[in-house]
Length: 474
Image 1: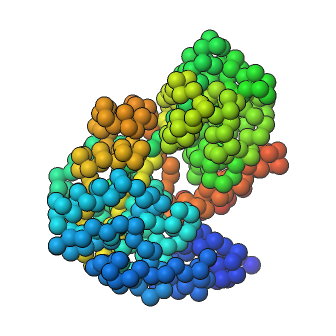
Image 2 (image 1 turned 90 degrees about the vertical axis):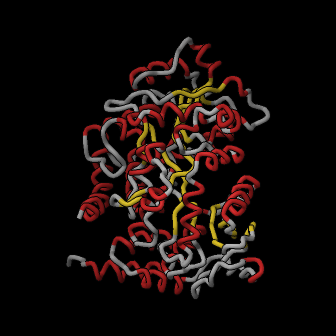
Image 3 (image 1 turned 135 degrees about the vertical axis):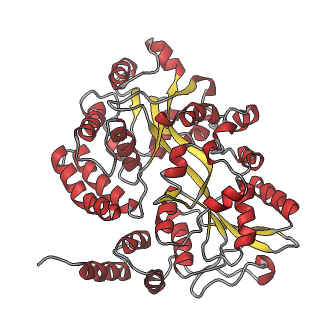
């Protein structure tokens, strides 16, 4: 008997209540099935939170931020600047250092508006649950928050975020200063801008200059070239040419996206010749040519970082933020590392771009004050302050600045990628991104570990992904 939407809703609620479905997956799937915000909040409240409730901050700690909605657990503020013209509450994930305090102090000095700066839990899923519960319940205690790529689509589609276009137009902020893909693909939903990119990121090919010199090779220009030099760089199990991120915990999804994208596919568009060519090439690197380790399906960013530091790899296509983990290692020879723009695939030379950015709670009761914060953090001089936290600013014009390059050295690698629209592409972002990633990873991992053939893996993945794609076209 065919299942209808009502059956899916009942199954989803029962799964969440029984603990078979994570809170993050519940929210994502509930939005696709058309649950109301109050309905989502009711189920989340019934499911309860993990680890026990945290004590609420006192009124003196919080300042003038408005009362949280029933069932919403606040976290203690990390920093408060007291203003004479009111106060807003901003939330930033897992980052508490002097850089952000100085930015907040500068804002209060210029505007007279105080800020309660709240640092959200470091665990990503806990943080996601916290913010989702707040927004779903109509909470007004959060005015602005620093979110990731997926939240702009998830929360924007749920109508929980304030459109930022008019706010930035008012301040004459030119969005052409930002990479187009970061504005249109991961900070907007259905043409409406819900997030201002603040810290930019991209996946780069890091490589060992000494190994390249020893093998007499140069950075590759295309996939054929990549395979050719990889064979020359590999020294059996002692050293592999390339590290691949094949573990199905999110990192494989990122690898699937960037390799298939270069061949004309995508993580949500696997049933085409380009995606098949990319996935075959990817597997052949370790299974046939043995220029990547056989452990690839179990390898993630942590294991590959340790391998790179242990001289096990000559190349690694990974997020620029990992550069910091490499150059900060006291035993690693920093003079031997460099990076290049990824070699061109069958269709393009794009790499994956991403960002963190600021969004505004649509339920905020202090929109006039919060609007000034959004306009403030969009300024070039303020965004440049990010470099003292080791983050590269999302404004393209800042990436060539000498001071930015000195304090955020990955900027030198990001500039050519973000300056050329043909070299970067954000991941497909939808309110159902977690379901897309899960379907792709689960089934493609089966192909990578010889459990199923490629056509079967793609069919099973697309059987789950295609209905999502079709529904979101409506």
